[in-house]
Image (cartoon, rainbow, N blue to C red; front, top):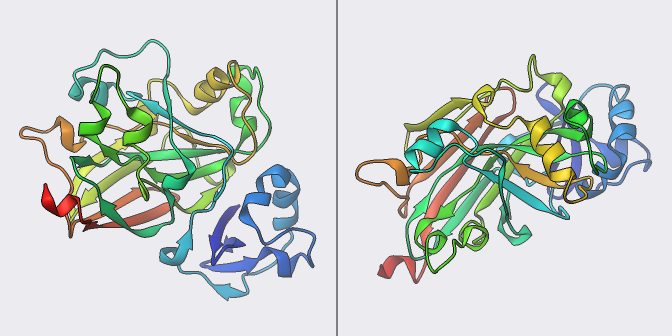
Amino acid sequence: MRIASVDGRLKVVRDGGAIDVEQASGGKFSSDPALAYPRFGELSKWAATAGSAEEPFDAALASCPVPSPTQIFAIGLNYSDHAAESGMEKPTSPVVFSKFQSSLAGATSKVVLPAGSVDWEVEVVAVIGAVAASVPVERGWEHVAGLSIGQDLSERELQRSGPAPQFSLAKSFRGFSPVGPCVVTPDEFDDPDDLELGCEVNGVVMQKGRTRDMIFSISEIVSYLSRIVTLFPGDLVFTGTPAGVGMGRTPPVYLKAGDVLESWVVGIGSISQTFVGGPVATER
């Protein structure tokens, strides 16, 4: 199953088109995408019998498919090659930070550049579909509703400022967490632990990797987090980025006004962000 949000309404995406969930279910399910995740099992069973798509679907118009998560987690240094380009040792346990809800955006968006050095980080985003507390590794996938594409945009100067890193703030400017265009259930993939992901800036490929190279798999991440916090349906987990970020290049390369960032995960689709100069960014 693939679900999306268009104009704030929950859709099942099928055969290049879409089914309006509230209308097709006769009101059994809400049009609010946020309400899909607490009833994700029921929704999946209904969708299997929902018939053919009734309206066109344009992925570029999709808004964030998980608009109001209770929690947003992100995993740092989860690919060995990215840890190396960051000058860090390979972690022995997941490196976790949070992102904030106001940074979420949809599949196609404009991002106002703040002052500083803004970098890209393409990631597979796991969407939690069932309450998870103290989940064993072998049952981690049972608590995942599906996967989406995300960018963990990062303002590196703020991130590295002060006596302690400011990961959460530096990665949570408005528009810094685009997610979309769909949430795709794990059964749609031949192997949900081995997906190609990448991104390009102005048509030049900057990142390309496979999730099989993650240090900690999605099931391991879910298990690890759930031993400490309770995960709720609709929570988001940004699972880490492969090598190729701007900070790791010689010399470093950062996003500037007018740049277009395209990110993809094979089997899910792509998202696109265009960067514009703000009143502060243009003065730097």
